[in-house]
Length: 459
Ligand SMILES: Cc1ncc(COP(=O)(O)O)c(C=O)c1O
Image (tube, rainbow, N blue to C red; front, side):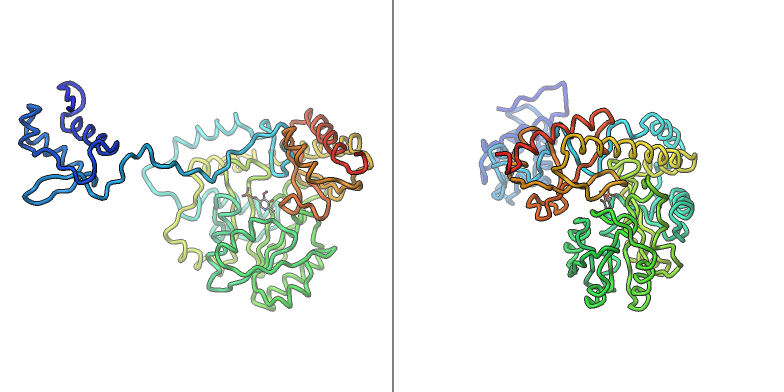
């Protein structure tokens, strides 16, 4: 019996909902005939139109079928007992929050200028036209601000037409890999390097050539032999080693690209944060050779949570981008784009970068001091003096498996350069960006306790 109440939602909705519930819960089984419209109407003292409306909604949604001359039946294909269907386990891992997380691309909570951002956000909200689609390539004024900033601070030669606003590095790489598919089907990547590049280009069916690093950047001989026409590098601050490609090698790379009609993807992910010397001018700006696709991000200096990155295309690739991505809009919400535009325009971005440089240098020095104090001679420092991390190498014999188990048990997370924990080269990143200054020493001390417990010679 269905319970239909005169007050509340329309009667046909009540009837529809209750029949639907019975079908879903397998009370009304597949192929069961429903009472005729006339019978329902007289049993429940409701109009035929009410029953017809309920049945027609169930029919439209596929719960029931109509058999001519016979009436309505519960659909034979219906999947019933929804609630008892096995619930697929989500592949998504719930991200564990560690007490001490030494991740190299993290900022402590106090770094993002929340008050200022919300003031700017409030200001831009009133000027946004929410009734219209935004610019596909990214807000024009934001692109203008960016082109001025890039030219001033990174010597990038470009105008706003060459810039595409993307939602994070993987989106930037997706756009480039999609655009260049007709041009080439393989890419040379510096090795070791940032794994996201390989992941995106592999997904797009590119053949990957790993180009090993020499002291001054990638091995050009191997690059030339590979016959690849696309290269990914981090010339100003190699990831993960932190090395800089000197100008002579940069020229060689540009010459290689010009001679081979090739493109170079320059990932300039954190140069603006360089605190020991002035950032090296970009590869893109060496001359206007149109062979470099420049890639930047706001993750390192401002926030990885807002997901804003950008690419600067050579002029001749702009029409190709526009044609291929004609259907697509920048994934960055317009209020974030507009807030960012104002952030740069009003001079806050420049001030913020200066503040970040000083803060990062302070944190870096605190981390280095703590490493010396707690890890003593058990490690050597391989990379320091820039970015948000110090790279250490074990000088003692280490049971790595034991170390990672102990760290996990004590809610401490460190990272290896090999992106897995087999640590062939015995190196570990100790990122400091995620810690407030007063937590750095205690974090390293906690790490060092597990470190020495896992050292083979102390057991
Ligand atoms: C080498 C490199 N490139 C780019 C990025 C920026 O990534 P995203 O813009 O997705 O935050 C990172 C961040 O860690 C990085 O390490």
